[in-house]
Image 1 (cartoon, rainbow, N blue to C red):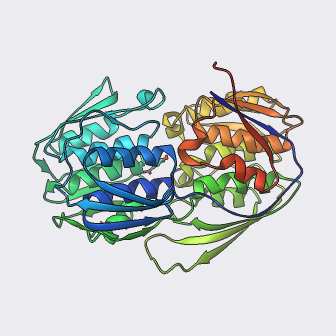
Image 2 (image 1 turned 60 degrees about the horizontal axis):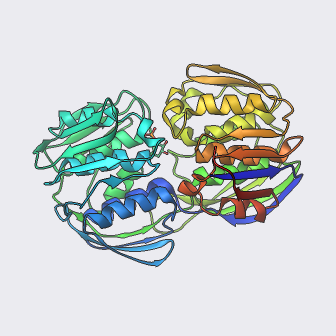
Image 3 (image 1 turned 90 degrees about the vertical axis):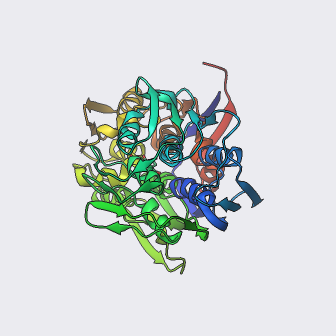
Length: 438
Ligand code: S3P
């Protein structure tokens, strides 16, 4: 099992790019596989989560060329072009892959079973299975958890579904099933979640109607292959952004970052805390997703009440927000974030435990935490196999009074291959080793 040891440093600087967006990379493989014609993907994230999606599509007969680690040519076989896989489809650590595939596979003519690793096997799947059943799918979970078994050959019908929580994964699963359904499919959200599926469906010639809190589609009977330029992942960029904010001295620029407004909550939260971040939109001409450049300087952060409306727009960045809060003057209150308990780990518990182990005063609440900024010591943190928890503490160590050893860090490769190298490139003191088993 890998470990990361990160040590204090005072200055970070440089211009970097982060790997491709994980959410968009998953979707590019899924829609490219269901489309007619050849889909080219540039900037694909070669992280383990997206490679699991790619392997699943290959095992269902999709031909894929990979001219470079981050570029793909997919030869889609049309909506009905997938073939029965020889065995289970292994989603690894990826909740997104499992939930979106559940929707996509509900309308196939063959049976499938979705499995995952230890962490994924503890994550709730009924939230996606229940609406798919309403559409006519035959889908079972093991007491609400993976494996997810999908029986093929069912006729699906469109539904109007009101999501109990803002979740792009559930919304996307229903929309993907809707491609195979009779009639219209509509999803109504309690708050806006990331809209990459909606944008990409439109680019693949499947129009989507949108209003403030709902999205619907009438299946056109097929998707048309297109070119997908995947921007850098803002969720990965959040770590060098955090590093620059908390360093005593910093000037870091990050090029080609996705700036989809349904993802930029973290930048708003950091700015409310007093962050010095310049955002320069870039015109890439591709149209599917907004992209830009960030420039971050060291900032004196203040504690805030994080507006609950920003939570779904920053849902993956709370490990970084918790670290910013620990370095800020005063108290930061996070609420309305119960969903954090259902991510790759229970991120409220795991972050609170980690911060406390390093001397920070944290009170855990049912749907968030109160974090009092203070002086962080060095120490040892268990990431519980959660990639973003591991990276957040690796950055925190910059400002700790001694090195932080982070255990169980193999999963950093699920979303941010090259994290340690990039961290060193901007001046952090981070090393990864093959630690001993727990
Ligand atoms: C994702 C949606 C988010 C996020 C996850 C990726 C997606 O989950 O946490 O990492 O690609 O659709 P929600 O379903 O909570 O929005």
